[in-house]
Length: 412
Image 1 (cartoon, rainbow, N blue to C red):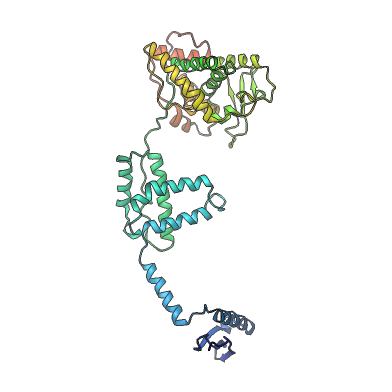
Image 2 (cartoon, helix red, strand yellow):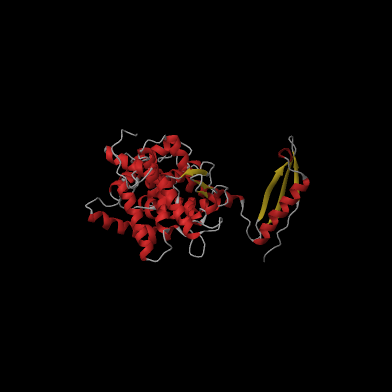
């Protein structure tokens, strides 16, 4: 017959003070004595009564465990801690913690950040490390992973370093929790190759792209000049695609020959871009045809809304590239670079300014960068031109782009 879990509180006095305890019977009838606390450790009569009440409540609920049972469970946990878990199990626990506690404010990862982290784990880290114990993974194993990813999977250095950073974070927690002694991925990084993004590398290529966009404007019955001027703005003003699609006529000063970029995340991004003569003329012609409201978007949709970057890439740029390549092939000229994107046109602008001798600090300001070395390292391409080509580039920036100017001296 089950008994009620009750018991009196005992006070055992000694030289150091009072030791509080409680004697009771479990639901199975076993007599138990539990020490509740000691007065020299801060325990009072009231504290002892509350602790005893909580303990007896656990007994009545059937969740009480004897001291021997608690010791056995502690020993089991410690034994399990001594055995290093496999990477797959620990990485999943780490991922769950990051989802809940990650992010800038510690409020958890966004949906896109979760998806990116999940992809790194599922596609790269778990297939390689999942079945290995944490303490069996050393620097050599991490380097084997990096080498195989570069050699066999042909993963780019930038993304590979991203997965290595995730791996370091996982091992950092493993060190912090005492699962391993050191982080085997701490010093493993892959040297990134020099940035090789695509860009237009001649005045002829630039004009071929703009002319192709103009032809598309006519054939597809788009608003006249819309596509051509948009691509000209990306190429000859270096705007980011979102900056171009957000641009309003009130930010275009044809009299001063400038574009004003607002709403950037950085102070440097909020800037004034000087219009080259060709772009100034293109914008003036577009404005004259539309007579727009100053608050209207320069490159808005037919209803005045903001267009999407994907529309620009698929419906305008990709088709203009295809048309330009056909025209260049007819003239036995090289095709436009592969994988040309709106950001490729932004790179073209920086490279163009550098090629005609603009100071890196000026280029930095026009691009909205904060460091001129970044402008040179990432965007400024080596345009190996003869004198005639440098003259054409200078004419494109400073005057009539159809004039194949006479050779000029070295401009860079």
